Image: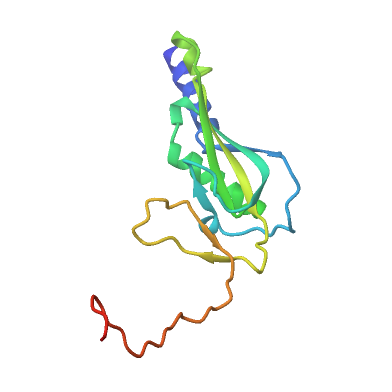
Length: 170
């Protein structure tokens, strides 16, 4: 009887130990045609979405069983899907966990964990707005400063021939 339980446990783990599964839900149309990109080129945000103008194109959800939960693997799965979709960035917006069944039933239902993310596509920047990098000592790593172009102005100048300070000439 114990060997049946062991074989059943191995079969369930083998079926579920393939990594995170990712579900994609379309949200909005992209501002331009999307082309798949490498996972490494997808920007990943977790504390706040990027401040650059963008469109939330899809909601992504990575799921794993509790017996194999690995957050790094779930983030990697989300980033891979974002790259396949052609997303510029991925904002990880939340996580959830569903507990498994109690006692021996845990073998059949170990519960699961989910990581939620948003596929972000940047809008085109108007040509008259230049991007300025924040100072290197800035604590706002997620900030982008938009600086409108300015016409060059001449430096003020003065031409003074004689100036007396504190006394008047007699």
